[in-house]
Length: 489
Image (cartoon, rainbow, N blue to C red; front, side):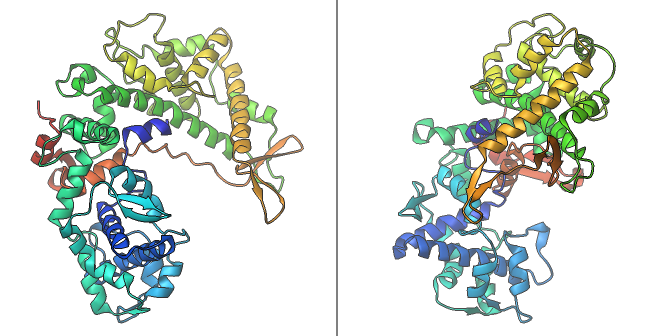
């Protein structure tokens, strides 16, 4: 699923939080080219620039950071500021982030996809979209300080560098980045002028903008799910029906329910296992008993019948999974979500095949993936056939075995040689000793990110979306976005 997210949201990642950093790195790349910096000098420039962005933010906001705009690395820079507002730049740049390249490591790949930065001999250089002069001017004071050999920086210098702080307006930067995000020039999209990744990102933005326009609400993800995941709009809406990526988003969002259910189920299982001190460690048999006790009586076929249809007569997806998430206690809730995913993989509900959906091919490709994987919906559908007339409790036991086997496969895939010990390091929270499992940490129940909140937030910073605080933060699409993204009916 992550691979599909990569393809549908190119240029934005789950950790790209602020549009301003795209501008910073584009301007830094132009500076690196001007000075012909090598990789080490580029790295030093970026680290010092990131520190100065934080310090400049503080200098411009003596009463506190406005609107929650906390720049990356703020917790490592704030303590280094003196009472008078000065900064030991050299020392802070060494320690504010454990990453060799600072927070560039989060923005580097997206910035390269956007075409604003490229790599050259291990360093950075401008990409195919040159940084405009007005944007370079915005960051000129900050980059001049970063490029200098000065160790100490005074508060007056930080005030000037703070012109590039988060929240400080720059029309040229916003218009430039918005044009790249939407793949337009002068508000017009000419497909032949853009790369395939640009066209795909624009398509996803169009789907999101149309979802916000139709659904509203205060969440980009809920707007997308409420508009695209279920019902007839993907094929009936005059805008969405013309965007092939809308069908792929439907498939991805439906698959996301199954992936999230597996993560929650696995986290619950790991929670049942004690620590390495031997307290409450579990055997596989004991874990099977645990999950068997969490499910009701009856057969798998009876459980499937209780789900009802997952498609309407026209073949459109029905919102089965959202209802399950609000009805059943875990972990039975998540097993039922997995069963619903298996029904979707089967392409039929309650023994009847729905009428053909004009976009079903695109939905199915995204939902099932390009290759079969362990624990994917087709895996679940095969289990449903094998265990149909057997008790649900037997299926629960099998799911425990499948999760433990998958955990071992993933752990072996991540096995790495540790030169410090001369042995191998295995990256897993669940370990086995004498046929009994113990854990060394908790597993996350968090959903796999689909980058829609990040895309919406970046779009909002660039003037594509707004939130009406008087209406409880309801999201709206700006007039500029309606025209640029062509989402008006």
